[in-house]
Structures are given as C-alpha cells and as structure tokens.
Amino acid sequence: MTSARLGTAALLGAAMLLASPVAPAETVLTVASGSQDAGQLDPHVSTKSQDKIVFAMMFNGLVRFPPGSMNPGELEPDLAESWTSSPDGLVWTFKLREGVQFHGGYGEVTAEDVVFSLTRAGNPEVSAVSSDYDSFESVEALDSDTVRITLSKPVPSLLGLVANYHGGNVVSKQAVEEMGEGFRLNPIGTGPFAFVGYESGQSVQLAANDAYFRGRPAIDAVNFLYVPSNAARELAFLNGELDLALGVRQERWVNRMRNEPGVIVDVFGPGELRTLHMNRMVEPLNDIRVRRAIAHALSREELVAFVGASVTQPSLSPVPNGYLGHTAEVPLYPHDIDGAKALLAEAGYPDGFGLRAIITQRTSLLDPMQVVQEQLRRVGIAVELDVVEHSTFHAQIRDDLSALVLYGAARFPVADTYLTQFYHSRSIVNTPTAVTNFSHCSVADAEIDAARSEPDPEQQAALWATAQAKLMTEVCAVPLFEQLQVWARREALDYGFDLKAAISVSPLITEQATLTQ
Image (tube, rainbow, N blue to C red; front, side):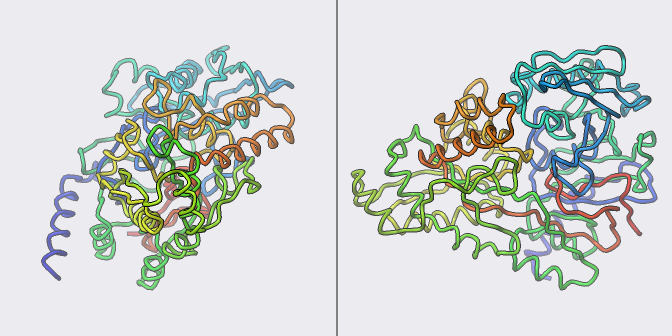
C-alpha cells in the first residue's frame, strides 16, 4: 500500500473510531456519504443531499413515495391513512393513523403536530422551502387525528407538499418548542430509525425504532459517515469497512466496481439536472448576446461523453426530463463556436472577457465544471474557478457571490417545484424569500403563478411550456445534462424492494432492509 493510501486509511480509521457504534447491536449498517459534514439535521431547514438521506430514515409525511419509486402517481398513505379533497381542489382533509409514536418518548403524533409542521414549513424565517407553501391559506386541526388544509388557489400535486420530502416531513411540536435551536442537533421524527448522536464532521448515528408503526427494522443501527474523499470511501468499501457507499458518477467507475467480487452498483433516478445558471446582475452577463454566446459555446454531447452515457442523459429544458409539465419544445442553442464568437464580437467583446465562478470540490460538479471552463475558453471566455468545500459552495452561491453557478438538483417531479425554486423572482438568492434562483430571472413569473391555480391540466401544461420557452429565450440558464445516482453496496445488503428511484437521492433504508453478517 502506498504512503498516500496509508494516510487515507488512517484518516478514515479515525473517523470510524469517532463514529463508534450507537449501542450494542446484532446488525449495524455502515454507510458513507461524500459530504464533509451535516448541514442542518432539521428537515425544514436543510435541502442538502447528505441531510435528505438521513431524513428519509427518521421522518414521515402524511403520504409517501413507495420505497423504490418517485412517481407522483404512486403516492400512498404514510402518517395519514386516508384523505379527501373538495371538487375545486381548495380544501383537503387528512385522517391520521392512530397510535404512531414519536421517537424519544415524545408521545403520539396528533393533528397539532401536523399543523405545526406544515406551518413551520411555510415560514420563511425557518424553512428553506417556504415558497412551496405560499398557497396554504390555513392548516387546522379539526380534532386530534384530522387535519384540514385550505388553499388560496389550487396547487399542482398538493400531495407532493405533504409527502415525506422537505417541508412535508412531520416533526414533534413539543420537541421543537422545548429544544429551540437544539432541535437541529437532536431531531425527533417517527421513521424506522431514530437519531442517537452526531459527531461534527464525522457521523450521525441512528438506532432502530422499536415502535415503528410498520414494524421494527431488521437492521439494529445505522452509522452514517461523512467521507468526502472518493478514494477513502472506495478503499474502505473494498476493505469491507462499509456496507453502502456513495459512488462516483462516472461510467468508468461503475464498470470497474461491477467487476469487483461481491459488489453491486446501483444506478437509479432521479437524474439531478446539471444547469449552468448565469447571474444577470453581473456584467457582461446582463447582455443577452453574451448569454446566448455562452449557450452556443457549451456542448452537451461532450459533457455526456466525458461523464458516461450509462450515468447521464442530455437535457434541453429548464425542467428535468420526466417531470409532470416538462417540454422539449423550447428554443435551442446548438454547439456553435463560430456563432458564439460572432455574438461576443457583436456585444463588444471580440477578444473575450473573464469571469469568476465558485464551485464545490465534489467531483460530480467540479469535473463537469472544468469541462465547461474549457469549452468557454475556446470562445475567449476565461473562467477562474474558486474551488471550495461543499458547504462553503452552498453558502457562497446563496450569497450571490458567483457569476456562474453550475448546480445539480432533483426536486419533487412536477414542473411547478423546479420552476418556482430556480426561476421565480421570489426565489432570487440573497433576498428574504431566497431559494435557488441564481440567475435573477423573472421573465416567467406570470406563467408559473397562473399554472399553480389552473384547474385544467391541458391549460396548466401549456402555461408551464410557455414558461420554459420564455426562460430559454431569455437564456437565464443553460440546462446541460442529468446525472443519475450511483451507490455501491455489498451483496449482503438487501433493500427489500426494487430500487428504480429515490426522492432522497440515495438508497432508502427502511424496516424492509436486511444485512447478512
């Protein structure tokens, strides 16, 4: 073993020691993500991938995606056992399951907890996804196990906002009120696994929920490690120290690992849409000719070939492929170096110009951003990359510090969610209602808002299509490709279901999972 590998192994070993088992257990699942640390262990505050993975094990919504699916048409009961809606879609009533218990002795889930959770999810002072709940006029407890949601206007796929994802996760009202800021370090949910401990920069430890309403998990404990180094994760996995690990989303890595004995590599949805957002407040990106030049300079085909066709697919629209409301009927900017140079000259930049862009050190974004950097160099645009740790990347791009933002995301698979979070003026970064509108785009606000209250599905789809066409005409951003999820597991780990997709962007570990040791 080389000295570099010895050093890597030593670092991982230190992390493993700090992430000591949560309790004596017969079956402990050891998982490694690619993050430096947790963001916020509060499901209404954080939308970061590393946090969504553990949230999926700790929390429930009123409804849920069946394990292995993220099809909105397959949403099924979770904390709610049934629901009804008024003919106009403005009033929804949910009946809760009886006897569901919160972790940590915080008692039975009641309608008051659901009211508290959804109200909190809509509070911009707390929630990272508050804009999703703008149409919630009221959330009321009719009795201890009945919740009524009244909308100011119909919401596309209302069930998606109360599913086990982002703001739909139900938290304990008592726990949040008692702990205050401390809740983010001691989250209380109802899921198959309960929070036990957290070591900064090292791990989160979870234990099986003995009282889980679907049955106690077969796995007794989960140690969720933060191992940002691809090499360290791979080494630990191949040495048998990890049961499940985030892979490298490159075709050559997938093919190599599938040749290892006893290893299964899962490639599954959702595809995270990689989009290059252009900050229109930064010169010369305020000139549409420059933005169009950038669009023509970029080659989707080259990017897909670089990453690998088995783990990527090209994307042309601001809304990911397969989402309800997606259309490919948008203005296109084919790869055209000469055309890009001509547009730059027309805009007054015959010799090009320079830009600064902040990018994460994570290879899934850094590697394609370096390809983008080279593609732009060919037309005279010199992009200086400021490579930072992943959490710093998220903080700085939300502070509006980067002229270009290459961002990858999967959201609830309805056009409204993606359009609202990335392209509505309410979501412009560094504002009181900020989400992830890095481009400062507002040209499709009217269509996005109108589609939310349009009862006719065909008219709604037409509004979403118009919004996507407007965004591409304005070149607020350039959709490039979708990158699928890649995780490696040992044959001993069986999820208990067919993994086709996971809204948590990771294999879902539930009461169905088994681990042979």
